[in-house]
Image 1: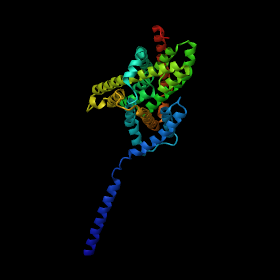
Image 2: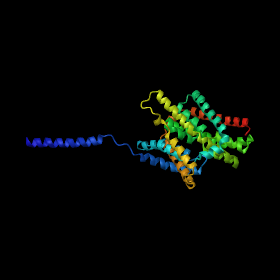
Image 3: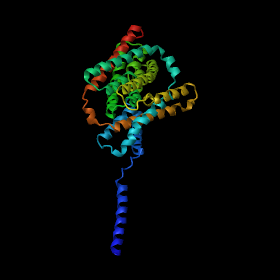
Image 4: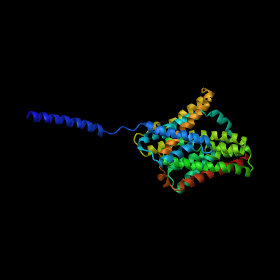
Length: 358
């Protein structure tokens, strides 16, 4: 009996130890570290920055999303990278917008770009109206329609990056919108200077046209300076003025999203939760830049930091994008991008002609 009891107790102890061991192994695994996805986005982002310097017409952000999409849809990206990529595509994206504020003086842009404001507002209105009408006709979802409309109206990839944390599109929608914008950037750089000379546009007129009708800053600069030095200077100033309008656009979108959530009766609705606080910090950064509290010697470093952060964020979006899901959208987003882009370019020309600034 004693031997049998001892054996039974020993068996129970062994069973308990085994149960504890199994319970530890059966417990839910810890979430993968953010470092894996962040490290992958940073490494690919560095390569994208190098390629962007080599081919500035395309630029680092576009290279980042293209390289990310290529890796995601060939080699594949494991689940261990997902948390870090999600963090980069959201938090790092917001940090990049804040960092951009340090290189943008609101007073200077407002002063030098005042004459272009009416043209800019009209072309932005044309972009949003055409995006809504064409998007509805083509049956495109509201988030992709908004991304393409804002990207075409304001400043391409940077505008898409700014509104992404607000409207929360799927990664493949963001990638598709940026790819669509990129196509028409390339077309504009090649086509606009030739059309400008054909229409006998003045340097100021062409700069105004390029600054209001071409999306990304790099493409505006490329088209403007290929026309003339004066046209390039004017185009850059107009483009900076246009870029500042992303602030009210983001605020309006935040209010619309908040109103929809409240209308749908979402639990825990809070305007403070959905408000794009990164835009407020963007304004703080811009104010610091405008008041001269940021030393001029740091401008180039801060600009490089902002560029790198946005490349990393867009690379993470590319690494999360599924081309097979994008393919289901077909050619309709391309048709939408073309229609919105043409409406912006034509409306800019019409307004300039009527104002006599051609």
